[in-house]
Image (cartoon, rainbow, N blue to C red; front, side):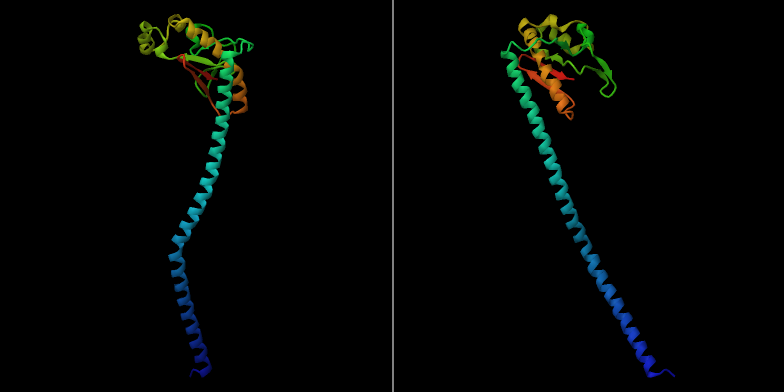
Length: 195
C-alpha cells in the first residue's frame, strides 16, 4: 500500500513535471516566434553598420580621386602657359607604329600589354585625323604607318606639349597606387594614359 507521503511526493513530481513541460512549451513558443524578428533586427543593424563603413570608404576614395583630378587639371593649365617646364619625349600608344618606344618599356603580364612607368602614351581620336585617313584608322586591324603623318601641326604641337603631364602622372601614380590608370583627354582630339 502506498503511503500518503509517497503519494504526495508522486503528485508533486507529476505537477512539477507538467509545469516544467508547460514552461518549456511556453518558452519554446516564445523563442521560436521571436527568433525571426530578432534575426531580422540583427541583420538590419549589421547591414546599417556595414553600409555606413562602406559609404565612408567610398567617400574617402572619391575624395582622393578628386584630389588626383584637381592636381592633373592644375598642372595641365600650367603646361600651356609655363615654358620653363622642361620638354619630355612624346610616345604614341602603339610603340610598333611610330618606332619610338619609351626606353623603359616592358611587357606587363598583369595587363598583358607593353607599359612604361616613366612615360605616358597618347592616342588620337579618329576625328582628329585627315578625312582621307579616318576610314583606314577605324577599319584597319593593325596600324601600319605613323599616324602623325595624317594630323595637322597644331595637334602635333599639343601632343608634344602635353607630354609634360608625365611629370605629374609619375608623382600621382606613386602617391595613389589604387588608381590603376591615369587618363587625361584634351580638346584638340587626343588623350594620354599612364602607365
